[in-house]
Amino acid sequence: MSFEIKKTKWKKESIYKTLYISKSLVDKIQQIAVENQTSFNNVVISMIESCLQEEDE
Image 1 (cartoon, rainbow, N blue to C red):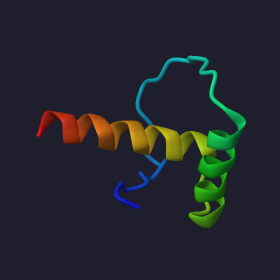
Image 2: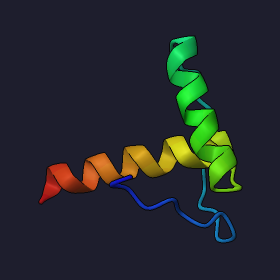
Image 3: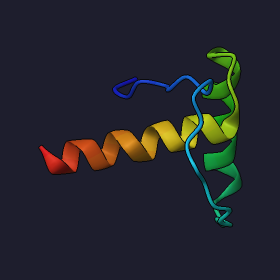
């Protein structure tokens, strides 16, 4: 796994958005969440932040 799953203790101001993603992708992300004892949402946010950080470098 090339991204770091963030801790959720220090939450930032957030907004709610809806995403439509395939069931197979949901299943993969949910498995990562279970393996890391965190939420589905935290895994998705960690992935997005990692991708955006790589893009900036």
